[in-house]
Amino acid sequence: MAGNRWILGLCAWILSSCYSLQQAYWFNNAFNSRMPVTDVLQQSGLPETARRKLQLSRQVLKFADEQGLNVGNAYQHYIPPGPGTVSYLVQAAEADRLALKTWWFPFVGTVPYLGFFNREARDDKAKDLKAEGLDVSLGTVGAFSSLGWFADPIYDAMTKRRDEDYIQLLLHELVHRSFWSKGSAAFNENLAEFASLHLAEVYLKAHRGGAGLAELKNYKAEKEKLSQWIFSLRDALKELYGKPMDRDQKLKDKAAIILSFRRERFPELTNPELAGARDREWNNASILGAALYAPDTKRFQKAFDCLKPDRMGDFLEALQEAEDRTSTVEQALDSLCAIVIEKEGA
Image 1 (cartoon, rainbow, N blue to C red):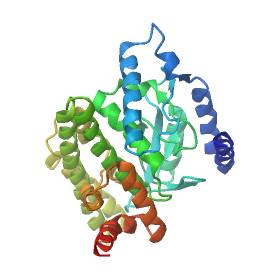
Image 2: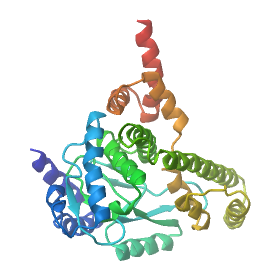
Image 3: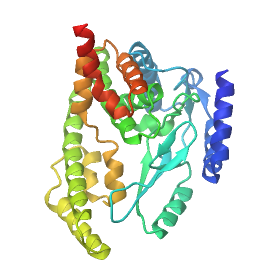
């Protein structure tokens, strides 16, 4: 039954556009090279780094299942070395206003990005988008979730991460597999980031004696600094775009604001991955794209603290039930505390 569901889903995805057909072709090539993790671990020539990460994945999956996440048959297969990344990403936005271009696909809904398994195909699409006068942002993807439509594999590129990053990455994608609100990409990414960071802390404390916890907490603290910088830059541009002036002047002022934020207001960061953000090409697309992974932790934490769930899966289930009763997933999140108060008063 699950296999039939995947076939139907793939057919609808393929028929939706030439883009989907192209990506299905590249994905099929990679997917067909997968091998069961149990078999891979028996290979004598497997690099030690990959071996450790595959063994670690067994432990993380067990933990995720105990936390009530939808593990299913995810990460039971390994795709051997290929490109240094899982896939390539492109995002686009209007040059003179904060509005990401979006695309719609069956089962997933509206998303503000396109992913490619081939870098050249991604770059060709980026040229087309730039020719339309749009701001464009290029990136790479460390992993992605099929949202339960098929058995997500472990790509070799994923195993190159530090242990705490790898743990959080798996948990992030499993949260997507457990909860997905169609057409709310920012909410979905924010939720997965909040939940996976919380779960990673719990895991490191319970299963690794706190090893890597200091690094994870430092990452969270510095990511919060970077997030606030992104939000401030976004707000400054939003104010600019609301002013009554011609487009050319807005674009000149936009460039000056971004330069000022990079040179004078960028936070002091020690994490190399985050600190490198200073030198990336900042424009409307990259700013809005980065904001997708900058969660409003206070909002999620408040709802989580109200519910006091034994497992993260219970929190996601309550959120799903609330979404079914409300107009938007944001309203669903904010309603969780009210639901608890109502139950306690009954």
